Length: 93
Image (cartoon, rainbow, N blue to C red; front, side, top):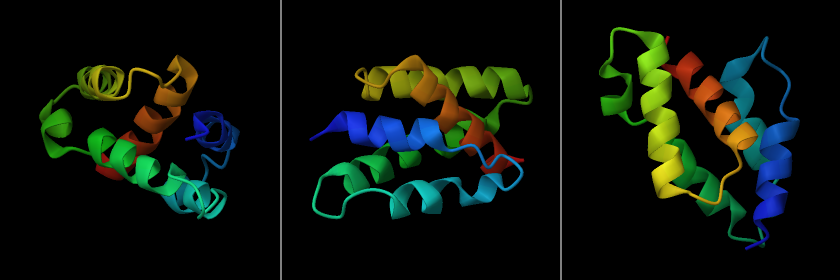
């Protein structure tokens, strides 16, 4: 899988005035002929897992998501993980 394509698309997302569009925007820019859409779905599921967001403190919840992503998807660069954490935090606000 050309993981660089996925990370490039995720890192290019800048529309934080409309954070609810993160997943659909990223998905629409990925090649359907690759494994990237499935990988995106798996990463997004991990980032939005309810048990990460049960923390009362949002910074602790974000740390839990980052840790989960780091464990499950060790190949994800830090800046890409940050994008997922940020997007998922808006899902849970």
